[in-house]
Image (tube, rainbow, N blue to C red; front, side, top):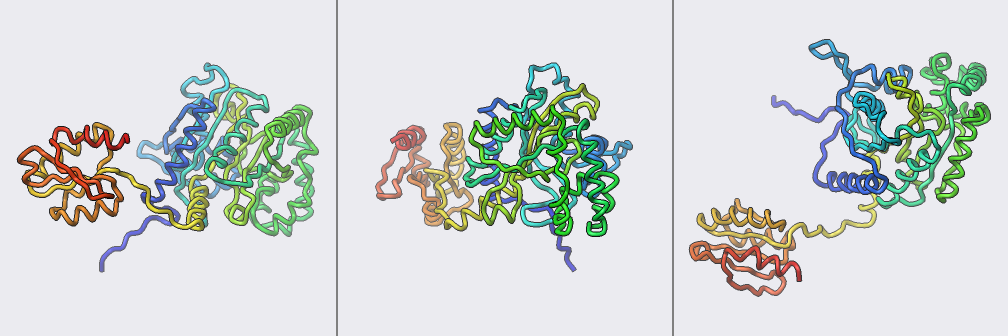
Length: 428
């Protein structure tokens, strides 16, 4: 009986079609990073487990249920990164970025890992891109982060985008709200899911993030944290909303939005596409302010704000749109095809191919084939404009045939001039 191996549950292979979309998303991020002057950073896929326990939060779903953790041969407790921000903060502290001019602006694009139930747009190995701004407390930074993600999604073709936003206050004003929320939830404890019953004492704010339908019903009548904000948090939120109004960004207040991570303070937000597909797939981006995280991980108190987006979730929607619009004709990747017949021609084709590559001209080929007709069929499928034909006679005479595919016209030129001849034709 032969073994049949498959990719692990919740993990998937990415093919060229996928990478075409992934590269489009990455390029859009890079363009936005250049516009807003964010520097690229790539942190290790493995981090010290304590970074996520202290930063993300012991009572979050990520730390309690979803982390891939291991103990190394040297006894180190390591975790495959489930999210990006704690690793960025660790790097910020470790490399002395606190001495740099503020804000320190960083962005990333890479794979992350969570052991959760696989579903549409949600995988156990997945890609995210994120933007982080550290060192400035002004709500203009929050507005900038929201604008960046709104712009990226808009540039990718998403329409009717809506920002859901809330303030969850800070440690000074959250205490009284926590007591008020616990009192409300205890009186309705029997209607909560088993996880939320356990959360009432440990972290009642997590209940507001629960997706269980019965918990959602109870959440709708819960106290709202915006009614309990201290003056500093109230003013911060008010100023942020005024910035968004000035920018003309569409937003709605969601008083029960808390996000699922313990390090958030003040601003939290998510961006959705207001469409049927958008509602099914969920938030396209989300984030907020985390003014306590740098201190929690051993650095000096540092205000910060950031957000992230799941690439697969974005790509799945882009793919669905492309299919609805109908399959487009395959774009021409090369304008030239190199065909050869005979051993001498094949050997000289290798050198000629390299000359074209060095000249920055992409050339299609089927060097493994000997039949000229098979090679011409391949060239026709690639929809190239010109075919270079190097036969045995041409190879001996150091010549080559240039054929224009549309008209069928062809002529012979010196092999040493082939690159120059094609350059002239492509420029026309």
